[in-house]
Image (cartoon, rainbow, N blue to C red; front, side, top):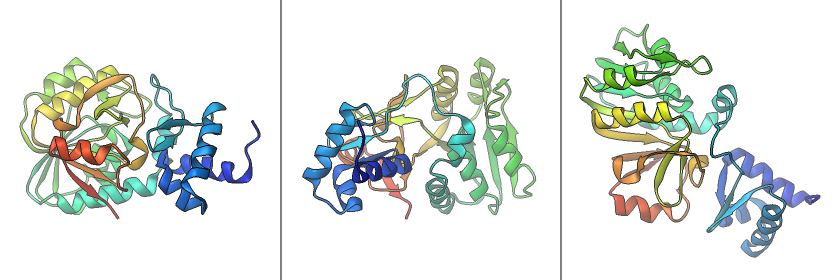
Length: 254
């Protein structure tokens, strides 16, 4: 297939967002939803994107995440807005667990002016960011260090995390499927994330809009397992209904 200029622009939009509703694509392209639907159908037949109910997303592997450096740059502005929104909701003098991921690292940068924080993390980049701050005490989990992103994982990490009970767990995710399942790629990382969720009085999920309708191989949990979702745009269908049914408070970072 040789995409026409409009279809090329449609693909560029998806490369920026990861996933998008048909209505949003139509608005961005200045055409009708019916025109976008036809374009999406043709691009899907050429395996250049994947259709879902009411929208489209980039084709993603279910078994392997994109490289760390690429993730650090992808949707960086969105992650920073989410991080700032979370930082505004975190009070001084509280305890946190911050998980692995580039969004988690953005949250750490947004917290540097807080005081009285006790932060447990399995992310060496988070420890490096907050460690020098006089207002933070950092407790770094033990375990196996992944060289690609300095995340700490493994059974030793799980056992370490289980010792604690904190005010808020701040976690990221690779994908949220249309049935409300939270998914990621690394089984060892999932086991640590599950321990983190079980060790907190409240679980806050940070996920930019590209994570909706994104598949991954390993199940972390369900939307009902979190208390608050911080994202950067209105979630596409069917997620608003799923979030309401699960009792999740959704905050959109403008």
